[in-house]
Length: 275
Ligand code: MLT
Image (cartoon, rainbow, N blue to C red; front, top):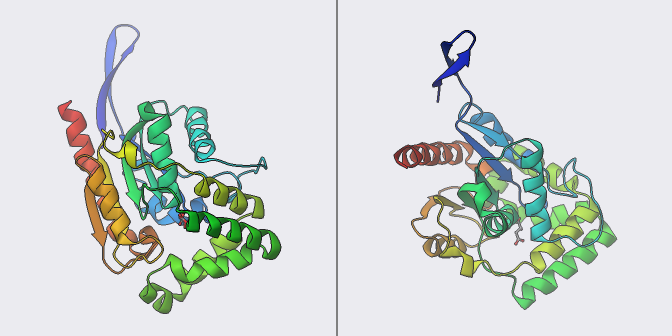
């Protein structure tokens, strides 16, 4: 990762220097109803490998909530505005989990020049069925009437593999805590954005950046067949199935997830060097 460069100085001396600026930036986009906190093991484990940026989407974590309807386009544009503020003008690796994957696909559609590669975890390309849309509206009513705690209680058992849920009380408590901290506006906004998102299936064949699709084998919230379909639709995508993991594969198998990202970045560096 170290680079050696030369820099012009006065009078006409070229100084060579080494630095450890990471070659890649990864934009991590969280799922629903979570926050950037879900990426803590990646920010920690990949710190020496990539510059990692993990926003809280509007209405989640510490981010503000402008109120009103939200769309996937809003989330994607918010991410680009953040990259602009950070002066990260070069294309970045975009890693999204579940709803974060919907945002990643929207980023690819709206801002392909900002995407160097995609990591799509526990997600899918298709839009909501009519039944799923009705479920979003029901969940939004529950969030308004009963608060984020009720949403968290409903979601919690589905977020993790049955074994993680039964055997890892600390992880269960951590995930519950992240979800309970979501604002009602954030939850309702995300439910509307997911309900109204467009079908990204037609986009898949045109994705021309390296793509890694990751799915937990025991994901009950997002069936593994969705990950298979997603990977099959994207030219040359690599599909990784992770054992002993459910929906939150990056938390349930953080080492496997980080190693997969590490290897993906290495391949990316190789292919960029060839260009
Ligand atoms: C998520 O985990 O981000 C959401 O549950 C995805 C969805 O509901 O479609």
